Image (cartoon, rainbow, N blue to C red; front, side, top):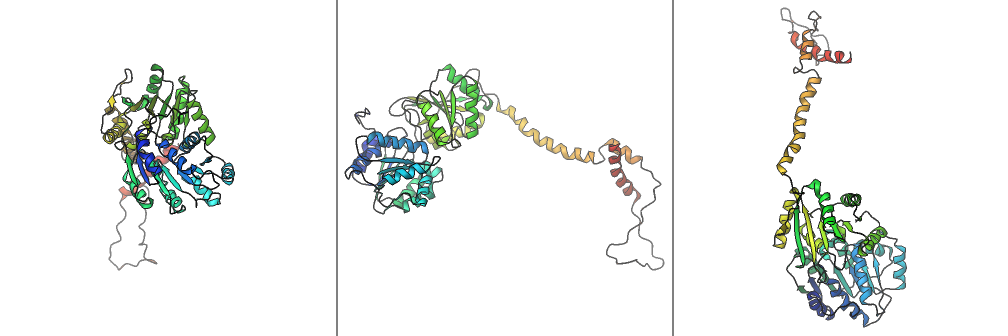
Length: 453
């Protein structure tokens, strides 16, 4: 701890570590970036070290993303530098064989994502029957990503007698319900009001038209000489396009998201951490997997649809006591999302309009939305005219030119009559089809001959 410069524990560490050392179950909630990882890593290392290194998995740490798995395992390695305990990461996107070889050599601590861990369970390459401590890190994010069923299945494979720790930035009711199914009288540690960002993060929103967001972001980076900026988009394609646009404007940028392989993601993250990359564009998959000391700027290019994700995004800055700035580019359609975010945080985000990027009047966009409907209403009328409807003067003229002396069509016998119909003497003949209707039918057929000529 002295080598890392740690002297005073953060509030979450001061309250959580004694509970973990006492062997009790724990529910711990704190703002992101306040030292939750050390809050469970330090005490579990001390507990496991009492028995020394072994060959079986004694501690299982579940995390939602690959980046967070690598981050947590790095903390375990650094904090346990002078201990004989061995730890590995298990996540998808990479070859499974090296992980199998590490497991065969014996490990004490496994940091894993749920999906790849179940792959090992299916191949019987991991034994979870000796787990003494289970840690769910960023549990709310795992539920958001749909891991609830995997988590329940994994818990069912663990010994009944074990210690359970759950750390998270937020604690919705779903998390509490999940905790009630497998935790024994857990103690609750909540060092900050729920869903609140770190107080050291300055927040500002810039109103701007959607079409000018890229230009405004490039302007902010260049004008303010930002050297390390994490930008969030809502789609993978949007991340790629934004990174390419920034590159064209002379800004060193790259993207990270789920479609990139793990080696690519690791390489891009390393470049960003080493200050070789000025702007990193990411989707929410990286919201909780990037741990960079003194990251100065986080930009919401697209606002998240879930207000809690905003807290996790801006929590990438203002970490470990350092200050940071969170900037949101807010178009007209983004305003309801910002209102929800402000309600969640119970505070207003400062509005600051950038000269030259003032948003236009959204009312002017309404005629463009109504235009396709008017076009669809005209199409049936044009279609009828092409088919020879009465609205086309050329077709009316053609109908008038139809010869009037053509023989009339003989009336047909009813279709239900099997043979000739006999009629009593004096009975009038059936009324013939009106001549006007016959002429109208010919008029409809005539224009097709004219159009080919």
